Image (cartoon, rainbow, N blue to C red; front, side, top):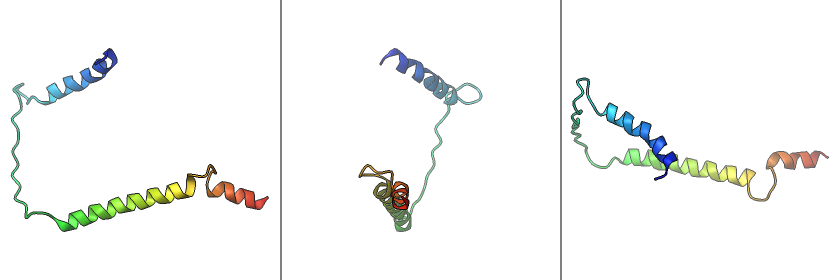
Length: 83
């Protein structure tokens, strides 16, 4: 680990040490949360899959419109047609 990395990590380490203590200065006790789940939630999985598909389609549309052949996209093509 070089010197620059140490100076960047030092504030993070110090802040984590400060935040891991309670008001009295003792180490904070972990909070245990018990969740009784009914199993796999298909609706949540479907929403996540739909969102991922939307991101992929949007990315594909942007790349198809503006990338690839060296042109600046539809704006440059329209300017050429007006001449």
